Image (cartoon, rainbow, N blue to C red; front, side):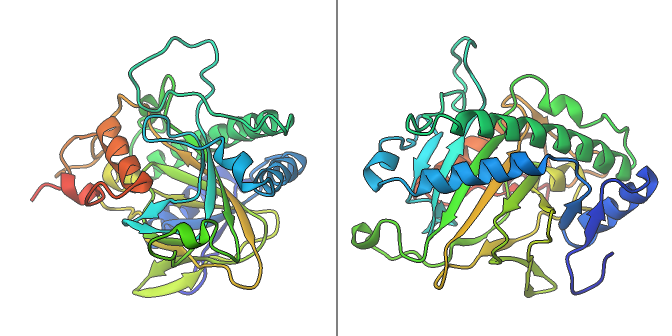
Length: 314
């Protein structure tokens, strides 16, 4: 399943001990893996991808009417920064369902401005989020056990309304904001690690994702019927560096557009992240603080982007 050149493929329908061992190896050596046998309904995957295509096909004015802001991070955006450099993409972020919940001071509890011209958009997106959440909780148990902890050791960090969200990505062949940009966009997404615990990526089958391994950028080309999973910064902290959050990037599209949906499985806003192993390499990391500072760096250039190295014990 795994070698030095190819991102491993893991069949979640395999025997549990085999799955656990393969996950541990993939997290330790790559931080990325393809997941088949995941059990997500192919019809749901097709429907949510179709809704993403329909959203991004809308006129620019209609999309910008749904724009996110620093105060409400959910909605449309075409000026995303990674490492303080603008990406050649447009996105739509979908936050937790807050209907019926009391207002809070949580910066990520705002309502998502769904497109009124696509009635099937919100139901498809919410159903997909529910399926991804269940999948991530299952993977989290296996990863925790693979680290020698109890299977449920990490689950409390996600209790209540956690800050997971779904991002729809469109990588067009032309810069989405064109001449308005002071500096043209470069890559589709510049090199980065994901801030949270796990990322589930559904693609349209078009390649473009790269991961840095052994100082070489290697392709993570889609596997038919599979999802692409990678570990994030919080898994690296919990594992005490046994599992490294991988640097990855996306090429800018030149000959044809590309669509992907990234579900970011993130802890609850109040969660305190600490290594499972000793001696600890990180001090306690307040997820809410880290999430807010990382979001600021994505939205606009508010200074150096926060990294888990800022919490490392020296």
